Length: 559
Image 1 (cartoon, rainbow, N blue to C red):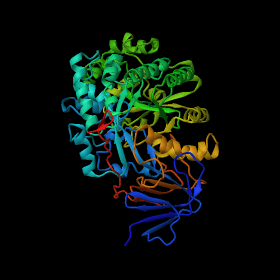
Image 2: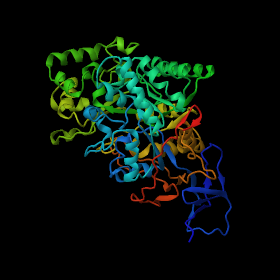
Image 3: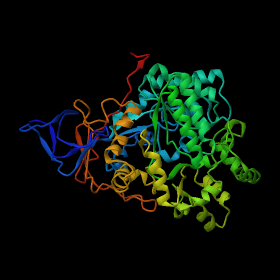
Image 4: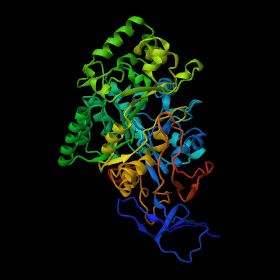
């Protein structure tokens, strides 16, 4: 009996951005056997896609799910990604990856990056990158997964949370760990220069560490040194690094709280491309809201020496008073190490944040007494506790240091949508979730609707771009940016990762107030030739995904 699957009568949007066309897709095992007309073919299953769009499976090119994928609950908890049509996850972004890991220093990493972990914790049942990928493979994965190695994790392994520049010996040790991870299948090197401990690094450190990437032909994927009024300088920094090292550069969530700095950054990017810099693109989410660890709301130097020292300092009233004054008065300057490492000031109200009605929502409370504050603006929590804004934040961090994170949300939904639609309309911008808090009570709605919001609201309803272009941004573009071979296009011989959806109904009802609402209009999801979603029925035990390992090619020679 044949195990072939025939998909017929649908409109194919093949991932290239070209207009749709009608034909049939024949799947044989893990692969697309052919695209054409297959009258009389012996197929075990026929999918009638009349009135539907047949597209490549969507690729979420920027996530923080690498800390959650080791959980045997991942197929259940991450169902919303399947119902958005996602078949492949890229993770290890923003400088943090779960491997390689120094077990003596894993505590600070887990607490600082708490939102990415399963609620029941992470045991780190591996040490090096290969062992991590082997572990994911052993338990089975419901998505294809491609993992970057994170600079912050590597720096923590060697130096911990020390607020100083690395010396030559430490840089050499970091290079060795990065090189080993690339040998073992990492898809590139990610940076988190707005986060501890990467925030403490000098440009020269990043220049030296990323020089390795040229040998492997893999990208540098930075969260730049802040998203504030110095964002253009932060973009210029990583472009200079990429140019000097002659490596590929992919900018994470290319945006800023200050629109004028984005214009400056765009000009710098354009000029660099004219010089021949290999900037493969950038990515963004379709929501005007950023999520992050609560610790990045604190002065970076407060975390010097680790989480325990940070919490002790926060308990000192004199230090608190100084922190409050610092937050109120600090001006972001370049380079950040000349100004106590400041890159962003999330707790500071500015004229722009007032105009945009930005709210700081708090999530992830574990203590019973605080759970009533879940998804509540920090200002409202402070009022209920009869405390000032800053001390409320500090007290919550001390009480809930292993849990809370925040979302900075532009209250004006229409304004936010217009801003983000313009940002992701850039032809080099791929669609992502950049998600945090997947296992928490009130996640960002991006977890339920990033891809379907773009297809339904931005493409179909608002016409910011065509649906074919939207699909390109979710498929072939991120596949090219992250060098995912034989995925991202509907083409003979490619892996059979396919999403079939109704173009008239595809949409996301998820909101910040009620995020737990599955996407609408996604009819079928096929991963490596196996049906994972079928007319509303999800098969979490299929575990059809593959743990992808980048082949070790040094200087264009396979080794």
